Each structure stands twice: as C-alpha cells, then as structure tokens.
Image (cartoon, rainbow over all chains, first blue to last red; front, top):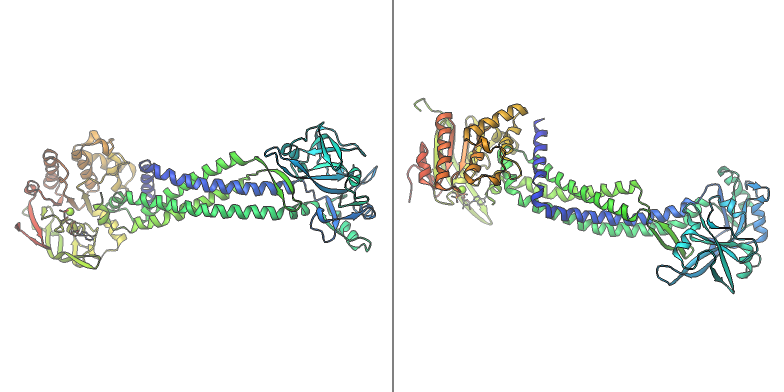
Amino acid sequence: MLSLIQLFSVAWYNLRSLPERKAAALTAAVGIAGVVGVLVGVLAIAEGFRRTMTVSGSPEVAVVLRSGSDGEMTSGLERDATRTIGDAPGVARNGAGPLSSAELFVIINLPKRSTGTDANVPLRGVEQGAFDVRGNIKMEAGRRFATGRNEVIVGAGAARSFAGLEIGKSIKVGQNDWQVVGIFTADGGLAESEIWTDTAVLQPAYHRNNSFQSVYVRLTSASAFPQFKDTLTTDPKLNVKVMRLSDFYEEQSNAVTKFITTIGVFIASLMGLGALFGALNTMYSAVAGRSREIATLRALGFGAGPVVFSVLVESVLLSILGGGLGAAAAYLLFDGYRASTINWQSFSQVTFAFQVPPLLLAKAIAGATLIGLLGGLFPALRAARQPIAAGLRES
Amino acid sequence: MSAPAQPLVSIRDVTRTFTRGSENVHVLTGIELLVNDGEFLALMGPSGSGKSTLLNLIGGLDRPTAGSVAIGEERVDKLSDRQLAAWRARHIGFVFQFYNLLPALNAERNVELPLLLTGLNKAARRRHVAAAFEAVGLTHRAKHFPRTLSGGEQQRVGIARAIVTDPTLLLCDEPTGDLDRKSGDEILSLLQSLNREHGKTIIMVTHDPHASARASRTVYLDKGQLSTTPTT
Ligand SMILES: Nc1ncnc2c1ncn2[C@@H]1O[C@H](COP(=O)(O)OP(=O)(O)OP(=O)(O)O)[C@@H](O)[C@H]1O
Ligand SMILES: [Mg+2]
C-alpha cells in the first residue's frame, strides 16, 4: 500500500513537472507521431488495395481459366469449352439459360486525369449474363451497353481516374470510336477500375474470332463449387482451372499487398528506430535535468522503484500521445482517400480507397507504446542508479 | 542538559576514499565522533575538506569505505539501499543549502512529501503539515510555489519538510549559505529554537562563525581529521 502511494506520488509529481521540459517532450511525441502516421498510411494502402481486390469476390461466383495460366491475360478458351462450362452441374439458371458469361480481357491506353499521360485500362468484353453473374453491378448513370453495338460502360473508379470517359464521349478502340453510355459501380470492387462492352463486338475488333479468355458463372450456392470444379477438371475434353472468384482475387492481390506492406514496414521500422533514439535522447536529458530533484526525493526516503516507474510513465505517456496524434492524423488524411496503382497481374490501373481499420490503429499505438517503454527504460535505470550524494551536488 | 547523555550518533574510525580515475582521494581518514541526543553540533572546515561527505555518511546517503556509523541502535553502514531509504524516511530530516524544493509542487505539497512514506492518512498528514508550517512561522505562504518565495522563506519550507515527520536527527548542509545576513539569522534562530524548545538533535555544516556561534558545540574538519579547535 505504502509503496503504491510512493509509486504514484512520484509519477504524479514527475508529470506535474513535465511543462518545464515541454519542448523536448513535444519533439519526442511528434517523432513518434510521424512513425505511426507513416506506418498507418502505408498499411492503409495495402489494406485498401486488398479490400478492393477481394470485396467483390462472392463465394457463389466461380471463374474458369485455361489450366496453367496465372491470370486472364495469359488464358484462352474456345467457344465449345465455354458452352460446356455454362452447362456444367452447379451453375445457376434463369429463363434465358445458364448464368454464365464468357469474357474477353484486353488492355487499352487512356490519358490519366492527374498527369495527362497514358496508362493501361482493362477493357472487358462480357455477355449480358455477366450482370446477373456478378450480382453487384449497378448503373450509377446512363444505361447498359446494347448488344451488338460499339458501346461501353465505365467503372466509377476508371471514370474518376481517366479523362474522356464521361457519358456521351467516345474512346478509340482499334479502328473504331466506341461511345460511353453508362457509368457503373461494383460495391467498390475491382470491376470499378474496368471498362465493359459486349464481348461479341470486342472479338472482331481484336481478331479473336471465336475465342475467349475466361468464363464467369454464378453457382446455385457456394457449396455447389466442389461438384462444379470436379466435373470440369475431370472432363478429358477440357483443360481448365476453376477457382472461386474470392480466391482468384485474393491470389491476384497478394503480390501487390505483400509488396506494399513490406515497403511500409521497412520504412516505418527505420523511422521507428529514429523515434526510439529520439525518445531515448529526450528521456536521458529529462532525467539529467532532473537529477537534483530525483536525488532529493531519494534523500527524503523514496525508493529507486518509484523513480524508474515515473520515468517510464512519462515516456510511455508521451509515446501514446504521439502515437494517438499520428494515428488520428493518418485516419483523417488517409481513410477513404482514393488512389490508383498498377495491378501487376494485369498490368493495368486499379483504383481503390485507402482503408484504416481500427485494428490497424490499435496496433500502431501499441507499437508506439513499445517505443516509449524501450526509450524510457535505460534513462530510468540510469536515474535510479545515480548516487544520491552526487545528485544533490548538481545545480 | 545535565541528564546522562547517550551518544545518538557514534562514528568510529570512519574512512571515506573516492576513486577519481586511477587516483584515490582520501577525504576522511579515521574519523571519531560522538554526538549526544539533544546536541546542536556545528561542523566547520575549509571547502573540500569533506564536511558534506561526513554529513552524507551520517544521513545514510553514502557508506564509509571503512569504520562504523551508528545512529541510536542502528548500524547505518550495514543497511541495504532499500533499508537505508526506509530508515532515512523515518529518522533523518535534511536541510540543503539550495533548499531543493520541488518546483512543480506548492510549499504545502513539498512539506507533505515525506509523510507519503509514512502510513498516515490524509487528515493526519494535513495536521502534521499545518504544525510544521506553524513551527517555521510560514502558515500564510503554504499555498505558494517555491519560485514565488524569497530565499529565507524557501529555506523555512525546507526546514518544515525536514521536521514534518519528527525525525531523530536534523542534518543541515550550509543552511544559511545562500542567504543574506538577516534571513540567515532568522533561520539560525529557528534551528536554535527547534533544538532548545523541541529537543531536536541537529548537525549543521557551516562556513560561517556567526552560525557556529549558535550551536552548542563546534568541531573542525581538516585534512581528513576532526579536531575541537580550528586549524588555520
Ligand atoms: N562522489 C565523489 N566522487 C569523487 N570525489 C568526491 C565525491 N564526493 C566528494 N568528492 C570529493 O571529496 C572532497 C570533499 O568533498 P565535500 O563535498 O565533502 O567537501 P565540503 O567540505 O563539503 O566542501 P564545501 O565546503 O565546498 O561544500 C572534495 O575534494 C570532493 O571533490
Ligand atoms: Mg559541502
């Protein structure tokens, strides 16, 4: 009981004296705020990218590619194969037939709004069934493309990032001008970075007379997937790989997410090391500046423990303060901030929004606390070991 | 003071050697000193002669290189750091040349600090603090912060802090060294009355013959040795 009173009264006194050294204390806190801000910012990029890539991946949707391909770009399927896939057991149907869409995936160049320079945009040819297969495509403006016409609809993300994609304008694909007739959303998913058109019109434009690259199907339920997959992979006439859309997107986003995370953690570690030395420096000078006060407390009979504790409390509180500031700033600046990057699997632009989930904030503040503990520990031990008589002589 | 006096402080053959780099500095060499309960002892000597060093040994802030330091029944030189801290809190009141008040606490809080190491509750602590302020005649300044007090007032707060736990022994290291003559005299009168009227045993280091004149006995430290006459 007595030692608890000691512990808290020395810590409390120490915090009361904090205003006397507020410049150094603020410097340390700002350093830590910087680390946390950058870490949260970079991880928000990775998290936002991962979310965009996976949010639209319904487990009831499956995608079929040629076996051995690592994405739609390198895949190829003939008309016969796409029919067999649509008729496979487990595929949902409506009055018009199976819910399946044989698709073509090409890359075109358009000028970015931000820089004016050209960048890759995916242009996807789909069948009318694609809307029911995806299930989350909503027209934000305009209408769907008409079958057999040179018309496109543009994902909301692509429309924001690239110039000349307003309704009524046209884009040049191959020899012809294609008119923009609608803007669509896809629950913030990957499709919003794409431009869609009728696959039957896209085929001749790209001289792919009867071939496709992928087939998307909606299953009767998520549990129908194994049967669907087995049927196709054991069919000797087919040479395909079958994935749930969610797994496909996850796989597609892994490389980029890992890359961003690695860079982010690397940068934040370097900065964290800097902040740690900043905290050490601040606490060493705080302790040095207070050595006479500490010696006085010790002479009065206060133990070494409360002195160590008080220094640690100060350092951890400063770190939490800094961490909180950094996290709050990162949250306000980055959460929902829109950006675009290259999806390395398709070499095209993906637009996405940064995501700052609460868990990320909590982790960052925990990291800041750790910096504070480490930064306070050695100065605290030095303060406790300093001989009292010597401390009393300091002026 | 005619009652048979028990030595409260007994220092036997105490040596204190500091090592500075590769060099040994022999500050105290075979000190013998007995101080009776109720004495007011002045300790004089040239600068650097080791007065503070000796006072620190008595107050348990430092340990002798050799020899024994006993206060009452307690062999102070044998206590661990932790035991020493608790022992100081109970038995020693320190008064410093530069007051050593904590700037972030007001006078009252400064005086209350040593009481946090006792088991006293808040009400009891408040009573003791009030009594200590009364004793040093500074009740009207209790809420002031150190920087708003004069040197003499700050030293009164320092003395209030030193006596608030009613310690066995009051150790003062040049308590008037930073004060003008008038304030210094007031502090000396205060110490004297604490000694005479409240029976406090006081050991006071000083350079000032005016100060030592108030003490009941003066000893002189020079070249590591104590004597009863000044060696000039
Ligand atoms: N911790 C220490 N390490 C090394 N030398 C020390 C230490 N403490 C004191 N000394 C030395 O011991 C000698 C005596 O110091 P001390 O402070 O006891 O003298 P003093 O008589 O109180 O002097 P003053 O009148 O100036 O206060 C000095 O030479 C001092 O430098
Ligand atoms: Mg001295």
